[in-house]
Length: 67
Image (cartoon, rainbow, N blue to C red; front, side, top):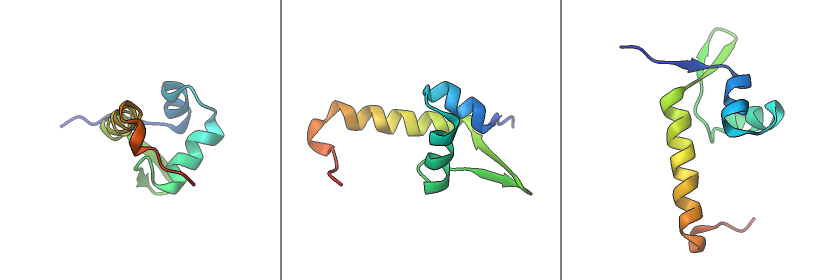
C-alpha cells in the first residue's frame, strides 16, 4: 500500500491558494490531515475527494450555503 502524503505547500500549490489558506482549510477539518508527531500531512486521495466535493457543489447552485 503506497499512500502519498502532501506537505501544506503542495496542498496550496495544487489548490492554487496561499499556504495560509491551505492551513485554514486543514485546521477547520475541511481537508482531513494525518499527524505524525508534530508533522501534519494530507493524503492525496483526501485532497482529491475535497476537490471533487467542491466541484459537485458548484455544479448545483442551489447547494450554496449562506453564512
